[in-house]
Image 1: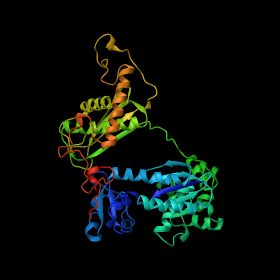
Image 2 (image 1 turned 60 degrees about the vertical axis):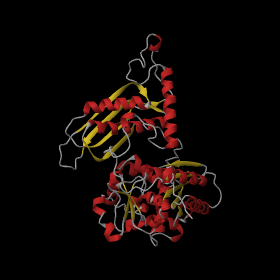
Image 3 (image 1 turned 180 degrees about the vertical axis):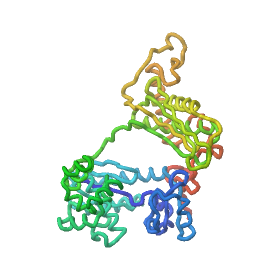
Image 4 (image 1 turned 120 degrees about the horizontal axis):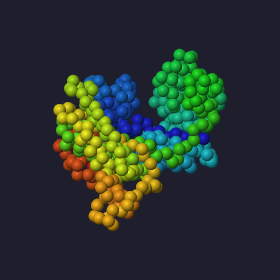
Length: 448
């Protein structure tokens, strides 16, 4: 048995914790540079605002319908997510954090009324953290995901599903006749893993609802579509094909890319941005205990502006795999200088670390320091002897600890520049709320 705990309209719910005046108000959270809606309250959905709707197309709703738009505050959302997931873990013995607002819980061995237990956990999350959530329970992860959709829909749209399925839905506890009614009322496109293209193909073949899909022969599905859809059908039929991923596999590539708040016109501004992106990517690669064998950097102009267009990328191989911020930044800046061309209005840049491998294996070199004072052995600053690499590992550990304790950017490479108005490449976040839980200066103060 599995449960899926999912925060309702998560980003908006996080904002409402500290701004209760937003309750009952149509609100959206905007993406980087305030480009489009990436989270919507139920009231905003009722206005017809679609996920990903460009801000310039919906901003008129501020005046006509009282829409409130906020810039994304990812530091706040990440912290609230950690608190929510720690409470969700109390539902069962195993947990897989699937996304910032979703968590699969393994229920094997859990006795008693699972619905009552889920309601208690849900109430605890709402009271202790302030996030409303829906919980779906099923014999497989796909059924748990579907049950979560039913639980949230039954709460938001009474009458679509039986009232007792609102907030918490346990498909395994339903009688066969009631389960068929619920499946028949659910569109096939709501099934986890079935995208727009596949759902359209299924509808063209007469498969309109989940009940229609459940009745299909898995072997036929495999021949007509794919083994992935076959696995989905088997999961809907109650046969587990996807287990909990308690230890996610390390990523093979790590990227950090951003669109700029304003066009960048010179190499100095691009160097600051690329340094920042490379530093963040290096921190991520250390978090998963990996080393990078190559660094890719790219820059491009905006295809939406009537300006001269330019787009270029380059891959810089490392002498040996590293996780040192200095070496990765150096490689990224060297690549940037190679592809930079003057006279363009750059709108986006990014850094990607390639060919990642575990940091348990390190490649050393002759310690040239014994022969002559050669510093890092002339290898471009990416290490040298194993002793030198160990020194840099401790240095990076200290860097990460300081930034984790005092906030990102407390210590950084000099080429990243200083915070402030000079950094024209910084994202537009004109509507960002304070970092209530992660920044001392932003902590709310209650006065008598």
